[in-house]
Amino acid sequence: MKNRTSLKIIIPAALCLLAFTLKQPLKNKVYLIGDSTVCDQPIDRYPVTGWGTPFANYFDKTISVDNRAKGGRSSRTFIEENRWQPIVDSLKPGDFVLMQFGHNDEAKEPEYAARYTSVPDYKKNLTKFINETRGKQAFPILVTPVSRRVFKGGQAQETHTEYTAAVFEVGKQLNVPVIDLDKKSRELYQQMGEEDSKLLFMELDSAEHPIYPKGRHDNTHFTDYGARIMAQFVLNDIKAQHLPLAERIVNGSNASTVSPQAK
Image 1: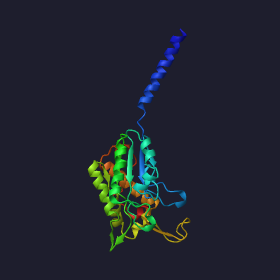
Image 2 (image 1 turned 30 degrees about the horizontal axis):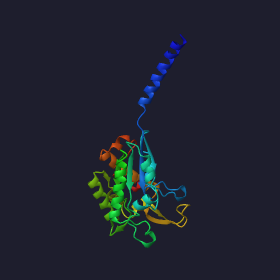
Image 3 (image 1 turned 45 degrees about the vertical axis):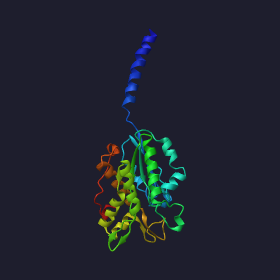
Image 4 (image 1 turned 90 degrees about the horizontal axis):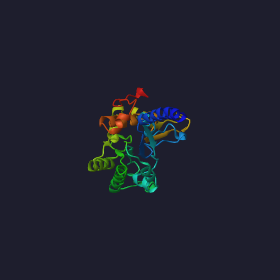
């Protein structure tokens, strides 16, 4: 009699637990790989911010963002320093990998020679990331290198010509979606103008920020404001292309038009 009573209690409880378990949403990770324009920056460099930091705040509870981007890395050094293999080992079906390299790959200056990667090797590295991501039944997404802020004669200049073209070539060859952050960011600089576009970047006068008492003139790295806008561009394009990740986005906003007053 006691056994029957116990079963009457245990079976419904087990069924309830099973039903609860089955209703739990599938959880996946979004891995970000890239350089300093993407990575989570140390607090002592604030307000320098990579776009991957605000990007992580726009997803529902079924997604966690793992930002593995690292400042100063090219596609080649990211692999050589064993930053990529641990990601491959951790990938699960349904995960995503967003990859944005190029800034350091193209650096030909003598002081950056250890980072430099030729265009053919850059394409090989992107292909490696893509194939190994797909090998784990995860989804690769290519992102063109976000544009630096360079104006000439009042016109925002293209700063990653060869490497952006290489991203599109690899994307077309392997049928991988491409988010053209290079073009989107450059169009924004042009829209805002040569002076107001400084608001997006680490363009600080002396004594403007306590961490940078001598000021800073950096047209590669974003402030938190600039990083938020770049993150929104990426999110908007994920939705516009109807990528599988789009249905996991919440609280996304349209960043197609931005004014300095939005700061």
